[in-house]
Image (cartoon, rainbow, N blue to C red; front, side):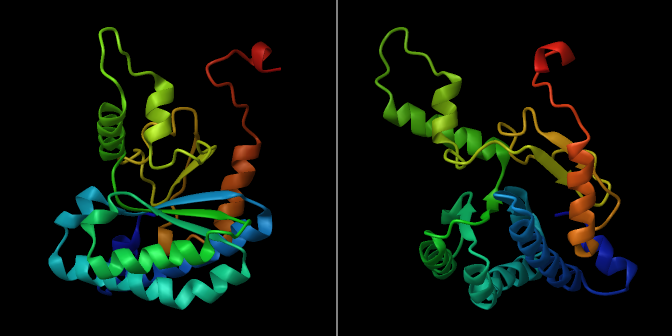
Length: 225
């Protein structure tokens, strides 16, 4: 969800104003997905690298996470959203960890949009954590091998389908350490729109563009047909 800072700078506002408006864009995206029948929406809210940002900005974001959980709970229930926070949750304060856990428990039985919010997340960190889990779980005898299926079963997203579409806002032309394993065959859509301006219209444009594409998964057009 890129472009919050640039959105604020263009308006001579502090960066936190961009984050506030970005939270509203997320709200609209979730509602739009519920209306459109999109079953899985995964958003990159806070990376492992974001801890290096200025302390006041990090503290504001932690407060925004907590506030959003409190303020949006009724709306998430109304829209039948299942919420999961994924990443190195142990990096957060005990209070925020508990708030996240309570929110996930409260929405666990919902059957509409599955909303994954990636926090203290990095694609490389996820793979490292998966490998360390495998090391602890396997009986390491001679000839023991790690297979793709082993890694897949130990990812944070182990029970979630790989994404079909990766949307990059703010003209970003890189994957930025996001779902590195899972996006192997995802279609990528890049838009100039800054995240605080990304609303239902922009989401529809991305989906319409995706629907025009032929997905091959390494195969030829003839094999796909």
